Image 1 (spheres, helix red, strand yellow):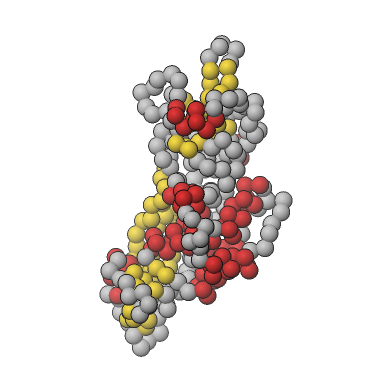
Image 2 (tube, rainbow, N blue to C red; image 1 turned 135 degrees about the horizontal axis):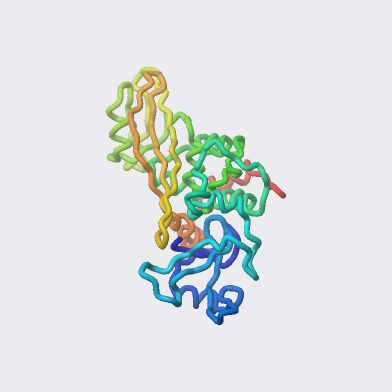
Length: 301
């Protein structure tokens, strides 16, 4: 892995693994740097994905690759206890132990991590919507996002074991937007998605007067049932590199059973956390935060 944390929390910041960052953030204090019986110093931190302890390789002793994090596989003094089940769902786990994403699998156990992710969605709902809206080139109504959030909550997707603070906007779309009708929503003019929908039968677009770069999807006099579909959540991790995640996004005409658009969405592990960290609090969409506040009641373990 390319990043580390110093706290086992979804809210904790991720840092790129460099000697400079490690020294700046930890001060090389225990438990982050420990002297073994051999007299050699070892460096430790927290995995940003599964929140287990990791050893950082290559900070002191030069290696051929960039420094990287490797799971300890055991308890490390001063760190949370090693959790084997969390490790199995980590994209950085050994291939023989790592589980591949299964979109139907939920671990219905309320843990601190589940609560943090649930609260993160509630507190950052406008930014979650911003990320997926920007990715797809869409602007959707209040009613649309209420339906999406309701679907996410009813299906208890916060128990999805591959959900993290990094992929939250995409997993929100994967499960919440699944099979939602997009009639009446606005699309950024000129994108591949817009062009594919515009070329389909019985479709018309009406330019939005307030935001002329967007146009509202309408039918052309006949019933229109266009739905979005997501599938194929995949993770790819390479030692010393960023985690790459992806899934497919499609638009289907449910009446003709025709797929009219498909693309693979690729997302990395730093964009959404950095957006939260770097964004100013005054640039918030209160109408979206009000939706989350109204619909998301607190959960406790």
